[in-house]
Image 1 (cartoon, rainbow, N blue to C red):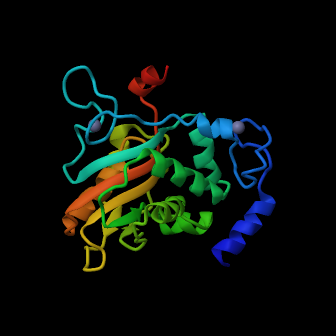
Image 2 (tube, rainbow, N blue to C red):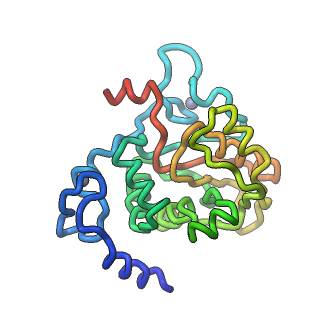
Length: 242
Ligand SMILES: [Zn+2]
Ligand SMILES: [Zn+2]
C-alpha cells in the first residue's frame, strides 16, 4: 500500500478529539492527534551538557553521560517525556498512528539543530517484535525526520541479533547488560559516508544508544551521534520544569 493511501485510510480512522485532553482537534489540522494546546505544552530540552544536553550540576562533570563510552558522541532530544510526549510516543508505538511520527519529527526539527551527519539510522527492533507490531516506530520517526532534514535514512545498517527484554522494569545496570552484544552493524561504504546519527523515540539511560555506538565504532564509523524525540525526566529536569 502506498504511503498516501495509508495516510488517507488512517485519517478516516483518526479520533477527532485530542488523545491527551479529549478536546476537539482544530479544523485547520484535521489529521492531528493532539490539540494545539497539548502540542504547545511539550517541554523542550534546553541547553546543558555539551555532549548529552542534560542540565549540568553547579560544579563538576555531567552526572548523566560521564559513564558513556567515547564512541557515542553528541546526543540530543527534542522534549522531556511529560504526559503529552508520552501519549504521542504511545500512539505510534502501540496504537499504530503513523501521524504521531510526523508530530515527533516536527518537534525534533524545530528544537534540535540540523546535525552534521551523512545518514540517519533507526534503532532496529528484533525480528519477533517487528513481526508482532508490524512496523518499527524508530524507523517511522527516522523516515519523517529524514524528509524534514533532507538527510538520507539507512534502515539496513543495524540489526538486532538478540531479542532483548523490555527495558521498562530494569535498573540502569540491568539495562546495559540487557543490550550488550544485542546489535550488529554493517561497516560504512562509499555511499553512506562515515558519520551517522542513530534515531530512537525515547532516551532513558542511553544504554541502547551506547551499545549501538560501540558496535558501529568497531566496524569503522568515525562519528556516531544520537537523536531522540523525547527524553525520560530526571530529578534535575523536574526541578527545572517546576
Ligand atoms: Zn489536547
Ligand atoms: Zn552529559
